[in-house]
Amino acid sequence: MKRRYPWLAVLLVLALTACGVPGASGPDAPPPVESSALPQDNRDTSWEVFPDDTGWYVCIAGTVRYYDFASGQTMTLCAQPGCSHRDESCQAWLGNAAGLGVCDGTIYAALTDDTSGAQLVSKDIATGQITVLERWDNQAGTFYSAAMGWISRGMAIVYLTRQTLEQQEDGLQSYRKETTTYLYDLSAGTGRVLFTPEEGAGRRLLGFTDRYLAVSYTLPEQSLLNPEEFEQQYGENASYGRYAYFNTHCQLLLYDLSDGTQIIIADHDRDGYIMTADPCTAYGKDCIYQCGGNTLYLLDLDTGKSRALVTMEHIINYWLMDNKAFILTDEGMDHETYILDNDASKSALWCADLWDGQAVELENAMNDSGMILSIHQEGGSFFRGLGPLGRCVISKEDFYAGRYDQAVATG
Image 1: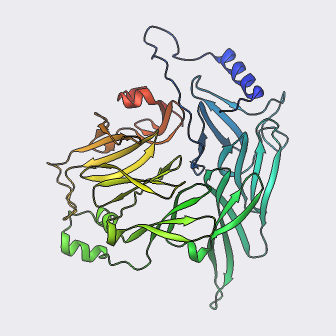
Image 2: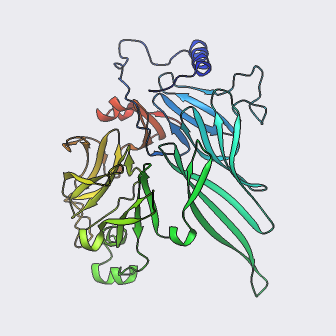
Protein backbone atom coordinates (compact mmCIF):
# COMPACT_ATOMS: atom_id res chain seq x y z
CA MET A 1 0.00 0.00 0.00
CA LYS A 2 1.31 3.46 -0.87
CA ARG A 3 2.14 5.50 2.18
CA ARG A 4 0.85 9.06 2.52
CA TYR A 5 2.72 11.82 4.32
CA PRO A 6 0.53 14.53 5.87
CA TRP A 7 3.07 17.34 5.53
CA LEU A 8 3.58 16.55 1.85
CA ALA A 9 -0.20 16.60 1.34
CA VAL A 10 -0.33 20.06 2.92
CA LEU A 11 2.32 21.33 0.50
CA LEU A 12 0.34 19.94 -2.41
CA VAL A 13 -2.86 21.63 -1.26
CA LEU A 14 -1.10 24.98 -0.82
CA ALA A 15 0.48 24.75 -4.27
CA LEU A 16 -2.82 23.88 -5.95
CA THR A 17 -4.72 26.60 -4.10
CA ALA A 18 -2.18 29.27 -4.97
CA CYS A 19 -1.54 28.41 -8.61
CA GLY A 20 -4.54 26.52 -9.91
CA VAL A 21 -4.41 23.59 -12.32
CA PRO A 22 -3.75 24.69 -15.92
CA GLY A 23 -5.81 22.89 -18.52
CA ALA A 24 -7.86 20.89 -16.01
CA SER A 25 -11.26 22.37 -16.87
CA GLY A 26 -13.36 23.15 -19.91
CA PRO A 27 -15.19 21.03 -22.49
CA ASP A 28 -12.00 19.71 -24.10
CA ALA A 29 -10.40 18.47 -20.86
CA PRO A 30 -9.21 14.85 -21.21
CA PRO A 31 -11.04 12.18 -19.24
CA PRO A 32 -9.45 11.15 -15.93
CA VAL A 33 -6.86 8.38 -16.05
CA GLU A 34 -6.83 5.68 -13.40
CA SER A 35 -3.34 5.34 -11.94
CA SER A 36 -1.73 1.98 -11.32
CA ALA A 37 0.81 1.41 -8.57
CA LEU A 38 4.38 0.94 -9.73
CA PRO A 39 6.24 -2.22 -8.71
CA GLN A 40 8.62 -1.69 -5.82
CA ASP A 41 11.20 -4.13 -7.18
CA ASN A 42 13.96 -3.03 -9.55
CA ARG A 43 13.51 0.72 -9.52
CA ASP A 44 16.30 2.50 -11.41
CA THR A 45 17.88 5.40 -9.50
CA SER A 46 20.40 6.40 -12.16
CA TRP A 47 18.13 8.90 -13.96
CA GLU A 48 17.95 12.56 -12.97
CA VAL A 49 14.52 12.05 -11.38
CA PHE A 50 12.85 9.23 -9.43
CA PRO A 51 9.13 8.76 -10.23
CA ASP A 52 6.48 7.38 -7.91
CA ASP A 53 2.78 6.80 -8.56
CA THR A 54 1.79 10.47 -8.71
CA GLY A 55 4.90 12.41 -9.74
CA TRP A 56 8.64 12.41 -9.21
CA TYR A 57 11.47 13.45 -6.89
CA VAL A 58 14.47 15.41 -8.13
CA CYS A 59 17.50 16.99 -6.48
CA ILE A 60 18.21 20.48 -7.86
CA ALA A 61 21.03 22.65 -6.50
CA GLY A 62 21.30 20.32 -3.51
CA THR A 63 17.63 20.38 -2.43
CA VAL A 64 14.94 17.75 -3.02
CA ARG A 65 11.83 18.81 -4.88
CA TYR A 66 8.67 16.99 -5.91
CA TYR A 67 6.74 17.38 -9.16
CA ASP A 68 3.05 16.52 -8.98
CA PHE A 69 1.88 15.25 -12.38
CA ALA A 70 -1.82 15.99 -11.90
CA SER A 71 -1.27 19.66 -11.04
CA GLY A 72 1.92 20.31 -12.99
CA GLN A 73 3.36 21.96 -9.88
CA THR A 74 6.84 21.56 -8.38
CA MET A 75 7.45 22.12 -4.68
CA THR A 76 10.53 22.02 -2.48
CA LEU A 77 10.14 19.45 0.29
CA CYS A 78 10.65 21.97 3.07
CA ALA A 79 7.97 23.30 5.41
CA GLN A 80 10.22 25.83 7.20
CA PRO A 81 8.87 29.40 6.86
CA GLY A 82 11.27 31.80 5.17
CA CYS A 83 13.80 29.10 4.24
CA SER A 84 16.11 29.97 1.33
CA HIS A 85 16.55 26.27 0.39
CA ARG A 86 20.24 26.84 -0.28
CA ASP A 87 22.17 25.00 2.43
CA GLU A 88 22.12 22.34 5.14
CA SER A 89 19.67 24.36 7.25
CA CYS A 90 16.92 23.56 4.72
CA GLN A 91 14.69 20.59 5.51
CA ALA A 92 14.92 19.55 1.85
CA TRP A 93 18.72 19.72 1.64
CA LEU A 94 20.48 16.61 0.34
CA GLY A 95 23.70 17.66 -1.38
CA ASN A 96 25.47 16.71 -4.59
CA ALA A 97 23.44 13.63 -5.57
CA ALA A 98 23.95 12.08 -8.99
CA GLY A 99 20.59 10.31 -8.56
CA LEU A 100 18.25 9.28 -5.81
CA GLY A 101 15.74 6.59 -4.91
CA VAL A 102 12.81 6.36 -2.52
CA CYS A 103 11.95 3.28 -0.49
CA ASP A 104 9.41 3.05 2.38
CA GLY A 105 9.27 6.78 3.00
CA THR A 106 13.02 7.30 2.90
CA ILE A 107 15.21 8.88 0.24
CA TYR A 108 18.51 7.17 -0.53
CA ALA A 109 21.31 8.77 -2.50
CA ALA A 110 25.00 8.51 -3.27
CA LEU A 111 26.74 11.85 -2.75
CA THR A 112 30.10 12.90 -4.15
CA ASP A 113 32.20 15.87 -3.02
CA ASP A 114 35.37 16.51 -5.01
CA THR A 115 37.13 17.69 -1.84
CA SER A 116 35.99 15.24 0.83
CA GLY A 117 34.95 12.05 -0.99
CA ALA A 118 31.74 10.03 -1.33
CA GLN A 119 28.85 9.01 0.93
CA LEU A 120 25.82 6.76 0.85
CA VAL A 121 23.05 8.48 2.82
CA SER A 122 19.40 8.14 3.77
CA LYS A 123 17.01 11.06 4.26
CA ASP A 124 13.71 10.76 6.10
CA ILE A 125 11.05 12.43 3.95
CA ALA A 126 8.88 13.44 6.91
CA THR A 127 11.62 14.99 9.08
CA GLY A 128 14.36 15.80 6.57
CA GLN A 129 16.98 14.12 8.79
CA ILE A 130 20.02 12.75 6.92
CA THR A 131 21.86 9.63 8.10
CA VAL A 132 25.23 8.64 6.66
CA LEU A 133 25.20 4.90 5.97
CA GLU A 134 28.74 4.71 4.59
CA ARG A 135 31.47 7.12 3.67
CA TRP A 136 34.67 6.94 1.66
CA ASP A 137 37.10 9.75 2.44
CA ASN A 138 39.56 11.08 -0.10
CA GLN A 139 43.19 10.67 0.80
CA ALA A 140 46.41 11.97 -0.68
CA GLY A 141 46.31 10.92 -4.32
CA THR A 142 43.09 8.88 -3.92
CA PHE A 143 39.63 10.20 -4.80
CA TYR A 144 36.21 8.54 -4.49
CA SER A 145 32.91 8.98 -6.27
CA ALA A 146 29.73 6.93 -5.89
CA ALA A 147 26.52 6.25 -7.80
CA MET A 148 23.44 4.14 -7.15
CA GLY A 149 21.83 1.65 -9.53
CA TRP A 150 18.78 -0.55 -8.95
CA ILE A 151 16.74 -0.51 -5.72
CA SER A 152 14.85 -3.72 -4.97
CA ARG A 153 13.52 -5.48 -1.85
CA GLY A 154 15.00 -2.87 0.48
CA MET A 155 18.46 -3.27 -1.09
CA ALA A 156 20.44 -1.11 -3.49
CA ILE A 157 23.26 -1.51 -5.98
CA VAL A 158 26.05 1.00 -5.32
CA TYR A 159 28.98 1.65 -7.66
CA LEU A 160 32.07 3.04 -5.91
CA THR A 161 34.79 4.44 -8.16
CA ARG A 162 38.30 5.02 -6.84
CA GLN A 163 40.74 7.15 -8.81
CA THR A 164 44.37 6.87 -7.81
CA LEU A 165 46.98 9.39 -8.89
CA GLU A 166 50.05 7.55 -10.14
CA GLN A 167 53.51 8.90 -10.93
CA GLN A 168 54.96 7.74 -14.25
CA GLU A 169 58.64 7.06 -14.87
CA ASP A 170 58.76 10.01 -17.31
CA GLY A 171 57.61 12.35 -14.55
CA LEU A 172 54.05 12.69 -15.81
CA GLN A 173 51.02 11.82 -13.70
CA SER A 174 48.04 9.65 -14.60
CA TYR A 175 44.88 8.41 -12.91
CA ARG A 176 43.99 4.79 -12.44
CA LYS A 177 40.22 4.27 -12.18
CA GLU A 178 38.60 1.21 -10.57
CA THR A 179 34.91 0.59 -9.85
CA THR A 180 33.65 -1.83 -7.20
CA THR A 181 30.00 -2.97 -7.18
CA TYR A 182 28.29 -3.28 -3.79
CA LEU A 183 24.94 -4.63 -2.63
CA TYR A 184 23.56 -2.65 0.33
CA ASP A 185 20.87 -3.61 2.80
CA LEU A 186 19.34 -0.16 3.22
CA SER A 187 17.48 -0.74 6.47
CA ALA A 188 20.51 -2.32 8.15
CA GLY A 189 22.97 0.13 6.59
CA THR A 190 25.35 -2.68 5.70
CA GLY A 191 26.83 -3.70 2.37
CA ARG A 192 28.91 -6.37 0.73
CA VAL A 193 30.99 -6.53 -2.41
CA LEU A 194 29.23 -8.07 -5.38
CA PHE A 195 32.03 -7.59 -7.91
CA THR A 196 35.58 -6.35 -7.54
CA PRO A 197 36.85 -4.11 -10.36
CA GLU A 198 38.31 -7.15 -12.09
CA GLU A 199 35.15 -9.24 -11.66
CA GLY A 200 32.90 -6.40 -12.80
CA ALA A 201 34.61 -5.98 -16.17
CA GLY A 202 32.17 -6.74 -18.98
CA ARG A 203 29.24 -7.23 -16.58
CA ARG A 204 25.99 -5.26 -16.77
CA LEU A 205 23.45 -5.67 -13.97
CA LEU A 206 19.93 -6.20 -15.30
CA GLY A 207 17.86 -6.55 -12.12
CA PHE A 208 17.66 -8.44 -8.83
CA THR A 209 15.51 -9.60 -5.95
CA ASP A 210 16.52 -10.88 -2.53
CA ARG A 211 17.11 -14.28 -4.19
CA TYR A 212 18.71 -13.79 -7.60
CA LEU A 213 20.73 -11.26 -9.58
CA ALA A 214 20.67 -11.18 -13.39
CA VAL A 215 23.79 -10.04 -15.25
CA SER A 216 24.66 -9.69 -18.91
CA TYR A 217 28.31 -10.64 -19.38
CA THR A 218 30.26 -9.68 -22.49
CA LEU A 219 33.10 -12.13 -22.92
CA PRO A 220 36.55 -10.49 -23.16
CA GLU A 221 37.51 -12.46 -26.26
CA GLN A 222 35.40 -11.73 -29.33
CA SER A 223 35.60 -12.90 -32.94
CA LEU A 224 34.10 -9.72 -34.40
CA LEU A 225 35.48 -8.09 -37.51
CA ASN A 226 37.03 -4.68 -36.96
CA PRO A 227 35.36 -1.76 -38.77
CA GLU A 228 37.79 -1.87 -41.70
CA GLU A 229 37.38 -5.62 -42.19
CA PHE A 230 33.61 -5.24 -41.88
CA GLU A 231 33.44 -2.59 -44.60
CA GLN A 232 35.58 -4.71 -46.92
CA GLN A 233 33.22 -7.67 -46.47
CA TYR A 234 29.82 -5.96 -46.29
CA GLY A 235 30.35 -2.61 -48.03
CA GLU A 236 30.16 0.97 -46.88
CA ASN A 237 26.34 1.00 -46.71
CA ALA A 238 26.19 -1.69 -44.03
CA SER A 239 25.83 -0.83 -40.35
CA TYR A 240 28.79 -1.88 -38.22
CA GLY A 241 26.88 -0.99 -35.06
CA ARG A 242 24.03 -3.31 -36.00
CA TYR A 243 26.52 -6.07 -36.90
CA ALA A 244 28.24 -5.77 -33.50
CA TYR A 245 24.90 -5.70 -31.67
CA PHE A 246 23.74 -8.98 -33.17
CA ASN A 247 27.09 -10.79 -33.06
CA THR A 248 28.74 -9.87 -29.77
CA HIS A 249 29.34 -13.01 -27.72
CA CYS A 250 27.61 -12.43 -24.39
CA GLN A 251 25.90 -14.54 -21.76
CA LEU A 252 22.95 -14.08 -19.43
CA LEU A 253 24.13 -15.09 -15.96
CA LEU A 254 21.99 -15.75 -12.90
CA TYR A 255 23.66 -15.31 -9.49
CA ASP A 256 22.28 -16.91 -6.35
CA LEU A 257 22.73 -14.15 -3.76
CA SER A 258 22.67 -16.62 -0.88
CA ASP A 259 25.90 -18.37 -1.85
CA GLY A 260 27.32 -16.46 -4.85
CA THR A 261 27.02 -19.37 -7.28
CA GLN A 262 26.10 -18.63 -10.88
CA ILE A 263 24.56 -20.44 -13.84
CA ILE A 264 24.39 -19.54 -17.52
CA ILE A 265 20.76 -18.96 -18.49
CA ALA A 266 21.52 -18.14 -22.12
CA ASP A 267 24.60 -17.92 -24.34
CA HIS A 268 24.97 -16.13 -27.67
CA ASP A 269 26.70 -19.01 -29.48
CA ARG A 270 24.54 -21.73 -27.93
CA ASP A 271 21.14 -20.02 -27.75
CA GLY A 272 21.35 -16.93 -29.92
CA TYR A 273 21.21 -14.69 -26.84
CA ILE A 274 21.00 -10.96 -27.59
CA MET A 275 20.75 -8.45 -24.75
CA THR A 276 19.01 -5.18 -25.43
CA ALA A 277 20.98 -1.97 -25.11
CA ASP A 278 17.93 -0.36 -23.49
CA PRO A 279 18.27 0.38 -19.74
CA CYS A 280 14.72 -0.79 -18.89
CA THR A 281 15.57 -4.50 -18.60
CA ALA A 282 13.52 -5.36 -15.50
CA TYR A 283 9.97 -4.69 -14.29
CA GLY A 284 9.09 -5.95 -10.86
CA LYS A 285 10.61 -9.40 -10.56
CA ASP A 286 10.78 -10.03 -14.32
CA CYS A 287 13.85 -9.55 -16.51
CA ILE A 288 13.54 -9.61 -20.32
CA TYR A 289 15.94 -11.12 -22.85
CA GLN A 290 16.03 -12.34 -26.46
CA CYS A 291 17.07 -15.76 -27.76
CA GLY A 292 16.74 -17.83 -30.90
CA GLY A 293 16.59 -14.77 -33.11
CA ASN A 294 12.94 -13.85 -32.68
CA THR A 295 11.71 -14.86 -29.21
CA LEU A 296 11.58 -12.71 -26.10
CA TYR A 297 11.69 -14.42 -22.70
CA LEU A 298 10.96 -13.34 -19.14
CA LEU A 299 13.30 -14.51 -16.38
CA ASP A 300 11.59 -14.66 -12.98
CA LEU A 301 14.12 -13.35 -10.45
CA ASP A 302 12.27 -15.02 -7.57
CA THR A 303 12.33 -18.54 -9.01
CA GLY A 304 15.17 -18.38 -11.54
CA LYS A 305 12.89 -19.85 -14.23
CA SER A 306 12.20 -18.47 -17.69
CA ARG A 307 9.15 -18.48 -19.93
CA ALA A 308 8.69 -17.47 -23.56
CA LEU A 309 6.65 -14.28 -23.88
CA VAL A 310 6.32 -13.45 -27.58
CA THR A 311 7.89 -14.35 -30.92
CA MET A 312 8.24 -11.64 -33.58
CA GLU A 313 10.42 -11.09 -36.63
CA HIS A 314 12.76 -8.16 -37.26
CA ILE A 315 13.26 -7.19 -33.59
CA ILE A 316 15.82 -4.39 -33.23
CA ASN A 317 15.17 -3.26 -29.64
CA TYR A 318 13.00 -4.15 -26.63
CA TRP A 319 12.36 -3.12 -23.01
CA LEU A 320 9.92 -3.42 -20.10
CA MET A 321 7.55 -0.74 -18.77
CA ASP A 322 3.95 -0.48 -17.57
CA ASN A 323 3.48 -4.27 -17.24
CA LYS A 324 4.35 -4.60 -20.93
CA ALA A 325 7.17 -5.52 -23.23
CA PHE A 326 7.79 -2.75 -25.76
CA ILE A 327 9.28 -4.01 -29.02
CA LEU A 328 10.79 -2.11 -31.94
CA THR A 329 10.88 -3.89 -35.29
CA ASP A 330 12.13 -2.89 -38.73
CA GLU A 331 11.39 -5.03 -41.77
CA GLY A 332 14.00 -3.21 -43.83
CA MET A 333 17.02 -4.34 -41.81
CA ASP A 334 18.69 -7.37 -43.34
CA HIS A 335 20.38 -9.33 -40.53
CA GLU A 336 22.70 -11.06 -43.00
CA THR A 337 24.01 -8.01 -44.88
CA TYR A 338 23.30 -5.45 -42.11
CA ILE A 339 22.04 -3.03 -44.74
CA LEU A 340 18.87 -1.04 -44.15
CA ASP A 341 16.78 -1.05 -47.31
CA ASN A 342 15.05 2.31 -47.13
CA ASP A 343 12.51 1.28 -49.75
CA ALA A 344 11.52 -1.77 -47.69
CA SER A 345 11.97 -0.11 -44.32
CA LYS A 346 8.93 -0.31 -42.10
CA SER A 347 9.67 0.39 -38.48
CA ALA A 348 6.99 -0.28 -35.89
CA LEU A 349 6.47 -0.11 -32.14
CA TRP A 350 4.58 -2.91 -30.41
CA CYS A 351 3.59 -3.61 -26.83
CA ALA A 352 2.86 -7.04 -25.41
CA ASP A 353 1.13 -7.61 -22.09
CA LEU A 354 3.35 -9.53 -19.67
CA TRP A 355 0.51 -11.88 -18.76
CA ASP A 356 -0.46 -13.23 -22.18
CA GLY A 357 2.22 -11.92 -24.58
CA GLN A 358 -0.34 -10.61 -27.06
CA ALA A 359 1.44 -7.97 -29.16
CA VAL A 360 -0.42 -4.89 -30.36
CA GLU A 361 1.07 -2.32 -32.72
CA LEU A 362 1.05 1.29 -31.54
CA GLU A 363 0.18 2.94 -34.84
CA ASN A 364 1.66 6.33 -35.73
CA ALA A 365 4.33 5.94 -33.03
CA MET A 366 7.20 6.06 -35.55
CA ASN A 367 8.58 8.45 -38.11
CA ASP A 368 11.64 8.30 -40.36
CA SER A 369 13.93 9.10 -37.41
CA GLY A 370 12.52 6.50 -35.00
CA MET A 371 10.03 6.84 -32.16
CA ILE A 372 8.25 10.19 -32.17
CA LEU A 373 8.31 10.14 -28.37
CA SER A 374 10.86 7.78 -26.83
CA ILE A 375 9.81 6.83 -23.29
CA HIS A 376 12.32 5.87 -20.59
CA GLN A 377 10.55 6.33 -17.22
CA GLU A 378 7.02 6.01 -15.87
CA GLY A 379 4.74 6.96 -13.01
CA GLY A 380 1.33 5.58 -12.21
CA SER A 381 -0.43 7.40 -15.07
CA PHE A 382 2.38 9.02 -17.07
CA PHE A 383 5.55 8.41 -19.07
CA ARG A 384 8.68 10.56 -19.16
CA GLY A 385 10.67 10.61 -22.36
CA LEU A 386 12.28 12.47 -25.24
CA GLY A 387 10.24 13.97 -28.05
CA PRO A 388 10.00 17.01 -30.31
CA LEU A 389 9.92 19.19 -27.17
CA GLY A 390 13.03 17.53 -25.73
CA ARG A 391 12.56 16.08 -22.25
CA CYS A 392 8.85 15.82 -21.63
CA VAL A 393 6.03 14.08 -19.76
CA ILE A 394 2.84 12.64 -21.25
CA SER A 395 -0.12 10.78 -19.80
CA LYS A 396 -0.17 7.08 -20.58
CA GLU A 397 -3.62 7.53 -22.09
CA ASP A 398 -2.33 10.15 -24.56
CA PHE A 399 0.79 8.12 -25.35
CA TYR A 400 -1.11 4.95 -26.24
CA ALA A 401 -3.59 7.01 -28.29
CA GLY A 402 -0.76 8.66 -30.22
CA ARG A 403 -1.62 12.16 -28.98
CA TYR A 404 2.02 13.23 -28.71
CA ASP A 405 1.07 16.90 -29.04
CA GLN A 406 -0.26 16.60 -25.48
CA ALA A 407 3.25 16.08 -24.09
CA VAL A 408 4.53 18.81 -21.77
CA ALA A 409 8.18 19.90 -21.75
CA THR A 410 9.96 19.34 -18.44
CA GLY A 411 13.23 21.17 -19.21
